[in-house]
Each structure stands twice: as structure tokens, then as C-alpha cells.
Image (cartoon, rainbow, N blue to C red; front, side):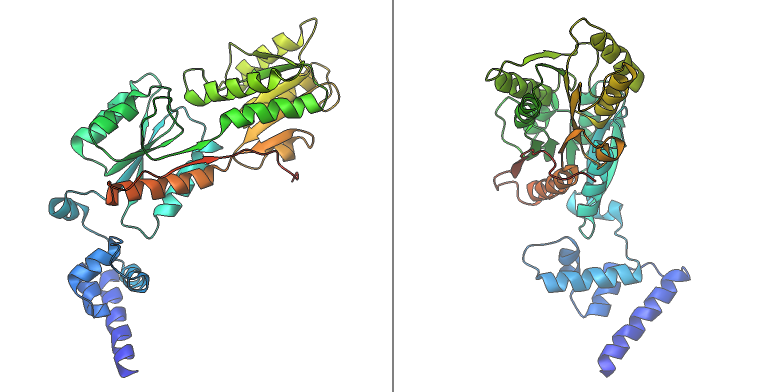
Length: 353
């Protein structure tokens, strides 16, 4: 008991010195407070597999109490590592749904590990390869997570060729082996079409992702596959996509709803597209759930609050982010192990809000 109080007293002294700016906690500080060797403390903080979980938690708890922060410049000099994971995103991505959920779940999963996340944005006008080349060539991160995957994505090939750790939110069609997490958009296309066909819809329009992204092809294939087993006519909106502005979507949806034979079903691959479809359909004098049905895919529970009779398919982007963070950390620690891969299977939401 006396020893326990002594350790607590030392810790309190160390915290007080930290607050007063008299001392910057180091690995030696934590070693003294825990009675462990400096090397053991270092390995515990770096999540070494041969250190017990109880020891790791004890070391992390003390490190948090004393306000320990690793000197990243020193870490890089000693190990060649930065303990940084970079999430590379287009600056035009919508933070309200997928991207915000992805950022949150990755950072939450990295909490308590040696790694921290930075977001590396690039402009839509820029070559997306530039950000990847910079990170790989400068070694400014230990690993990268990317999305908006193309069928033969040159970013993926470049990092494979340079043996640089990465994980992708989505898959290529090239058959390359690497960590990824994906939503089964082929199954989404099939499920959405079948849901509309079950409601008697005969003419269905898909507001797809940009055609150069691989998941758009998967979604389109799934919709056409399901339509082939029915008498439903399907078509793609060519001038707008799921990430188009609300005003652009409104103009295009008004155009198709003004035709002599307007569509009676919409498949929307984003929350924005679903909201624009419903709002414009109603502006044109049609009733949702009576004249027209809409299937909307969402990452954040929202559409059910907007309208109660939207057919909703949810994508668990938080699950994706957590998986990608774990998969990338394993790729960095154990590159010889098989890459982690997973696919989420979609289903229609059973209950509304």
C-alpha cells in the first residue's frame, strides 16, 4: 500500500511539473512510474504483439496521465517511421455524410495506438497522383487510405509497385491483392430495382456515381441484371451524378419528369440525390409513394426524417473506416500477412426513424 501511494505521489508530481512547464514527460518518465524498462514502455506504446494487453493498457494510462507525447522527429530518426496515416481525399467531397463518417471512424479506431491521422486534400482540378507521389517519395506517412477507386486505379498500382502500405475504400477490377473495404454496390443495384419492381414500378431512373469510379459500374451492372428478370425499363441520367449540386439535379429531374412518359421510380446512390429527387418530384405535382417511389442510399440516418416513405438502404461507413484503419495498421506491422479485405452486403432498412 505504501508503494502504491508512492507511485501515485510520483505521478502527481510529474503531472504538476508538466503543468508548470518544468518537465516534458519522456519514455523514462513512464518507465520510472510503472517500474518497467524503457524498451518495454516503448514497445507497449507501439502496440508490440509480444507485450501483454494489461501492460499496454497500464502504460497508456500512465502516458495519458502525465501528458506524454512522442517526439515524432526522434521516432522517425530512430525507426524510419512517422506514426502517421494519411487519408487522401478530394476537396470537393461532401463532409455531411460518407466523408465525415469515414474521418470519424478512422480517427476513433486509431485512438490508443501509436498512429494519428492527417487528411491530405487535393483539388478536383489536380492530378490525384500528385498527393500520393508526395507522400511516398517524402515518407511523410507510414500508410495511406484512399477512396473514389477507379477500375484500373493508377494510385493503387503505383503504391503496389513501390511496396508502400495502403488500404482502399472500394475495389479495382484489376485483381490486385491489397487491403480494402467495399460496399456491395452490385447487390445494391439489384436490391433497389427489385424493391421498385415489387411496388409495380415500370420505368426506373438511376442517379449513379461518376462513371469513371468503379462502384458506379458495379451499381449499373446490378440494376441491369435485376431488370433483365422483370419488365421494368431502366435508364441512367447522363448529365448529373450522385455528387452533383442540388440545383443541377433539380434541373435534370424536372426534365425527365416533364416527358410524356415520366419515370415512376428513382434509384439514388446518395442522400443529396434522393432529397433532390423527392423535392423535384413533388414540385412537379407527383406524390411520393403513390405516383413515384424513390430508393435512397445513405451513410447517416436522415432520409427517414425527410420523408417517411422513401425506401432506404444504409451503408455503414463507420464500419468501413474502422476496418480500413485496422487493415492498414496490420499491413504496416506485418506486411507478410495476407491483406485484410471485406465487403458489406446491403439491405433495405427494416424500420424508419
